[in-house]
Image (tube, rainbow, N blue to C red; front, side):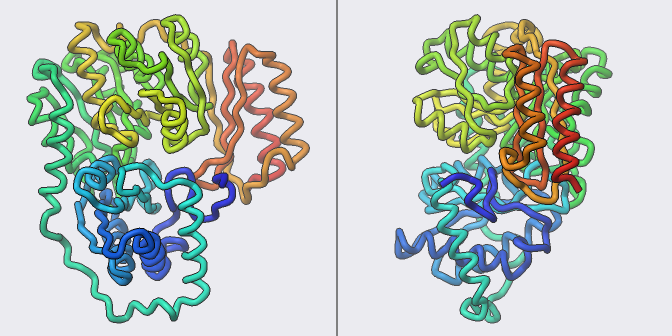
Length: 459
């Protein structure tokens, strides 16, 4: 099934405004029941681990989802505040049948979401999400069949949460063989899930880390900080007068990371893929000499990899689709420009910001090169991404004006640039991405397409 077939699940789980459908108290409970039924069909007494980010709504959503799971016979363990990849790790390493994360990643604090991993640590397939969706809608049509009046909300903390998080931190620390103790690093935790694990992890590895945005209050997640605002990190590093060798910043659930070099220049996921690919290639560990990125990765990455004898494959946007392409082709490295990076040379099954940070710092130490030197030859084509809020997600091919504008842009670029027009999988947005040889051409092509989308579908 294609992702367009589903109504609730987007590219990264179910997402919306907390308290509004599909994240009301009743619908969240019913989602838990539907997910529980999916697990019970496979195993009589299944178990699930659930984690959350620092949003104000995350606790009650986790509680309601847990109640729905428990109501159909699923044993639920809580990991409390933990990163998304932390839940994926626990699902596969602790023998759980599912892992569930309550988070809206980089979205504003008013939003939230539900992400589900199977017991092997991988995100659910589109087909399985569709099957769960059908049951959710069935329960919504007959809510009286799923009475929850006898259920009680758990207390504010559950036993074992700290132990589960500690397991995950230990696994990350064990993945590093180099001595990172001499690195001076500024770490922006985005007032999100990374605040629960990053300080412990960096202390365990004796990294000289200074932490910022580690005081979540339920509403300040991603606010002017984190991977959504990497310029904040870069500015602080630049103003530190040589105090830091590099900076790292995570998004709200820390499944992705962006960086800055010692001069404060932002290093995105494309540059991380380049550094990691070359390092693995030099060690003979880059299977098939191939890296999987997405349609959003810059042409400059493709050219730089080609110059190093490495092939770039492109998948649809969304780290789950990158992973699907990696598993299909046997590639061991893949990721997104936004900072999701997946390493399949270890036991990772999803993008992990903390693991990515450790890998990149390890490369810096072993190569004896600065981060700027490692990616200095990446020549980035001018690129613009413009978001247009839309009232509906009509296929662009069905809107003549939009389709004509896209075709005109492709003719104008004539192979010396790229146009990618798509809908966001998590918000009511159309995204127009244009790369061109010149800034002026990039701006004019982007504006022409965006104007047609606004005219036909805009709010």
